[in-house]
Image (cartoon, rainbow, N blue to C red; front, side, top):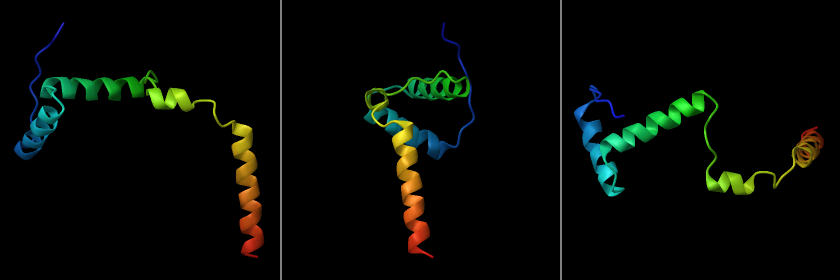
Length: 81
């Protein structure tokens, strides 16, 4: 169910947003709706990963990252002694 919403936004911002939406073949309403969905899902911890994030998930283990950080920290400590 769609609900009508009235917003007060600076005229220049509205003009830029309309151009942005038109360049992407979307309506300004859909653009605002998408933004609000993303913000509210993120707050609720429900945000979906993008395909790239899903593809890269699990490629690097936390242990290997920790090893690199401690190794780099040791390198910097030795370098700046």
